[in-house]
Image 1 (tube, rainbow, N blue to C red):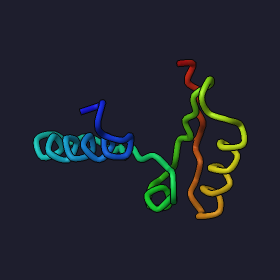
Image 2: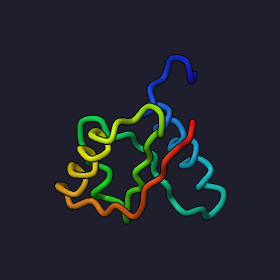
Image 3: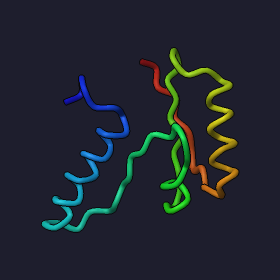
Image 4: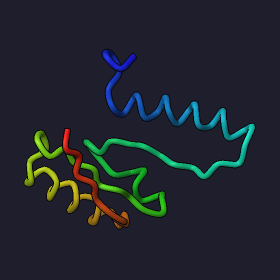
Length: 84
């Protein structure tokens, strides 16, 4: 599945799995969504975590996404820099 599904599709699959599991236990809701064209989910949550890859993500792209999130009123609660 990882070879054919995009990051957004994988996130939606994980969200569906989480929804099924939530029927059987009380777990907090966590939404994973990649931001490429908009930040629609980010404004509906309590906060967003901005994740970037140290070797693949350009500073300009991080800045652009940060500005896009702030422009929608989404709250950025932190950032994470992956080493891989």
